[in-house]
Length: 134
Image (cartoon, rainbow, N blue to C red; front, side, top):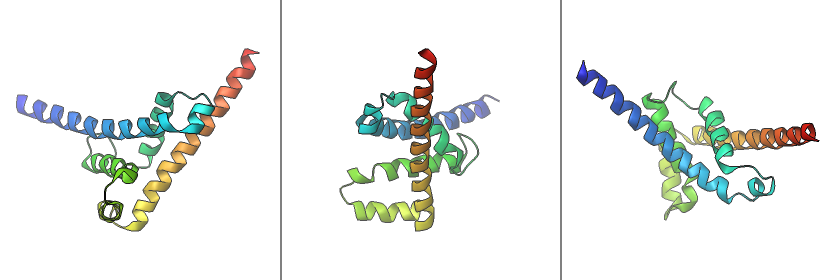
C-alpha cells in the first residue's frame, strides 16, 4: 500500500514539474510582452489564463497522464525555440516530438489562440470593471 502511494505521489510531483516549467516559460514571456504592460494586465493572471486555455486542447486528460506530461515538455521547448543555439535542430526535434509538422503547427496555434483569448477577455473584463466602478 505504501509503495503504491509513493508511486502516485512521485507521478503527481513529476507532472507538476512539467507544468511548472511550462508556467515559468509563459510567465517570463508575459513579463516581457509590451501589450501586457500597456493594458496593465498582471503577468501572473495572464499566465494562469493561458495555461488553463492551452491545457484544454493538449493531449492527455489530466496532470499525471504521460501524454499530458509530454505535451507540457513539448510546449515548453516550443516556446523556448528562440533561445536555442541551433534553432533548426530544435525545430526538427520539435516536429519529431509532436509527431509531425502539422501537429507542431496545431500546438503553436493552440498557444497563440489561448494568448489572444486571454488577452481579449482580460482587457474586456478590465474595461467592464472600470465602467461598473464609475
